[in-house]
Each structure stands twice: as structure tokens, then as C-alpha cells.
View 1: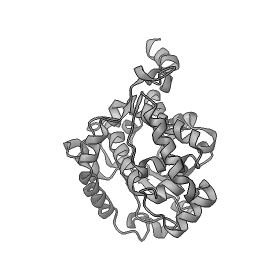
View 2: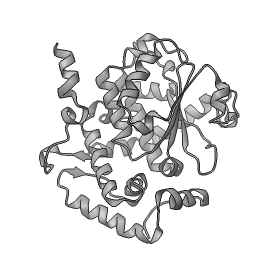
View 3: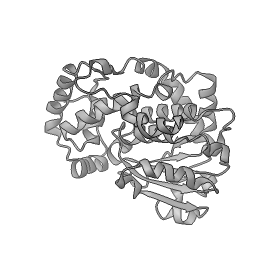
Length: 310
């Protein structure tokens, strides 16, 4: 038997119905992934069952697709050292970001087999104090912990609420086209997770610039899952019931700072995990065929480099 957490009844049914999960095939598929990794000189990967299972589920148990996703996961991470290296939860700036709670997963899901809801509030940090890379580095840490612990996230996917209260032009100006391309690649191509929608609330003027930039880099499926509610929380409640949300949003999930502090504590407990993570990635010099480096992954040798030179 593979060494993986048993799913709740609701999630096990969803995994069988939507991801075509068959218990009798798991051992064989996990062994096949390990064999493939052992024959891939350019990838240094975690190989525990729970980790590899995430790629099988993210690929609806297509073994070939799981290999592609796992390769891309590490290639994108290796090409993004500014987000993926030096992820020390005891670093003073990261600690401060954790306690600000710029992004936090909400404790409850709409249904037992529903996606994980993540609340993102960029307006809580000061853009003159933190770079967008520092902010996203924290996001990658939070996501990695969830990928390790959260079966709703892995089986049912993730849904975001982006609250833009208190966002200023200084926040939006941090999003250059090249950074937006990188961030989109990290969440879309470099991740085994399924996106189930993104809800924008309290949108100020100037928001359209960044929104349209992100939209341009999204694939068609993810583009169709963007919802802009303005300051109308009632229309948000049609998708995410009030009861799921923190008190500050009229909900029953308790004050947001309680959720934020519990998460900050959890991130600190992962210090050793993030240290270990530094050793994993791809060595593009050893990759058979064309390397997947920053230039060809993010298309920076084309349009963006041209923009900078002209």
C-alpha cells in the first residue's frame, strides 16, 4: 500500500469520479514515476509517495502528463531563484509578511469535497518596504505547505479571493509584464494544482492594468474563471457563502488575525522543510534536448527583452 493519507469519503468519491483514481493502480504508477525520475539525469526531486501522488492527481492519473508536470514544476522553480531560494521563515522580512497575513487559506470549504479558498489581501503590505518578489516568495511557502497537507487543495483545487482594499498605484506598479509572466507560469504551468476561479473584490481604479496583464498570460480555461465583484460582497456570497468568510467580510470564520497567526506559526514549523527544499530542482545542462531556462520558459528573450532595449 502506498504511504499516503487516506482521503475523506467525500474526497475519495471526487478523486474516483473526476480524477479517475483507482486504488489498485497506485503502487504501480508511483513506482513508474520513481523509475522515470531515476532515469532523468536533470531532475532532483522529492520521491515520497504523498508528494508524487499530488502529480498523479493533478494529471487525472495520466502517467505521461504527471511526468510532464513534475518536470515543469522543478524547471520553473529552478528558473525562479528570486522566489524559490532563501525561503527562511525566520528571516525578519518574511516573518513580518507572515504576520501581516497578505495571503491565507480559509479554514473551511463550501462543501466537504470543495476547493480550498485562499484570501489574498495585497493592501496590507507597504510597497515601499517589500518587493513583489518578497511577497510572492512568502506565497510560494504557503502554497508548498498546503500542497503537503491539504487534500481538498490537491483533489478539488483552489479558489482565490483577491481583496484589493487599500491597494495603491504603488502596489500595481510593482507588477512588470515580465514578473506577471513569471508569476503566471509558476501558478499555471509549474503547479499540479487546479485553479477553480478567482474572485476580485473592492477593486480600485488602476486595477484594470494589472488585471488585463494577468488575463493575457492565462490560458482560456483559467481566463473564464475570473470574477470581478467590485465592492459588492453580495455577489461574492453567491459563489462563496458568507459562513465561510472571516468576520471582517460579514462571515462566521472568526477574526482574520486568528487565522493569520495560526498560519504564521505553521510556516515557522516548516523551517527545516524549506532548508531541505533548496537541494531539489533541475540541472538544465544535463537535460536531454532543449534546456528549460528562464529565457525560453518565460519568453524573456523575445518581447520583454526587446521592450527593455528599445
